[in-house]
Image 1 (tube, helix red, strand yellow):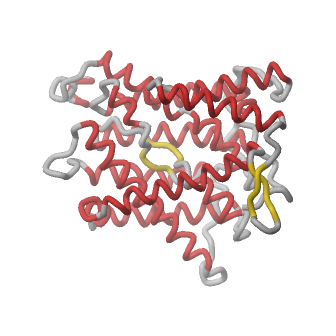
Image 2: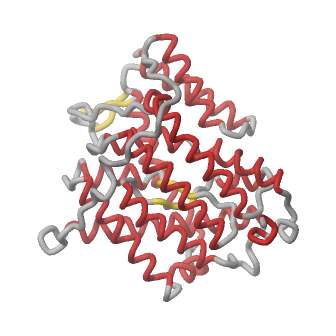
Length: 352
């Protein structure tokens, strides 16, 4: 049955290799399970419900990618998209998180409609390399800025806007420890470097009393606080929502296209400069984005971390199935995730 669905022999892989690859991909991208609730809770969303929505939506998206396109390319709520959702749309523009989810839902529906005209795959062939590289770099700078602020390494300043924080404070020292651990592991090509760094920081935080133990395993959290709570924004009353929807479309379009091309090249999936079954892969992304908005999470996109699973030998959608199962298993570790991903209290010290 697996051979019939995923063509393992034709792809030069085995069930064992695909399982290892799926576990590797999960280890590499599982940090989103901790980060997503922390970021979206700053916009007023229930962190436990966001965690559940993140795991369920990601698993659903990965299964779609596996069955429609048969690629080992994992999907989850995108880093950068979640920061734009919280800090720009909700906290800066004053849009409610319900309306922001509605904007994401509209963007996903538009992507599904674009599937029938093939616009997104055309963009994949004409997108300049410089633009493809610049977009994730810009998103990365935003994430780095917010991360430094949450860690207390930088604070707001009336004149320069940003200045150095108290590097001797316990949160700053703990954050620096985690960053150093992750950097060392990355330099040594250790898979799951981010996850290991989070675990190491949590252990130190528990020892020093900065993190409070809340348990490890429990029943999955309720998704009710965010499920179907989106509100379709009235763009006639609030024209700024037009630009919000456009930016969500822009981010998802170029982020997904850039990731598919980059991962496709590494995995050897490209044929004459094109990715076979690109339309099916993009459709998976579009359906998952709309589904995620219904469940209560920000834009779902393809993950560059899928390259780690491909490096471990993943070549088919079976890799995605394994990663999806692990995402669902993570639902039973909500106390651990709540403890490790406690959000930063956004207030007067926040300069974004």
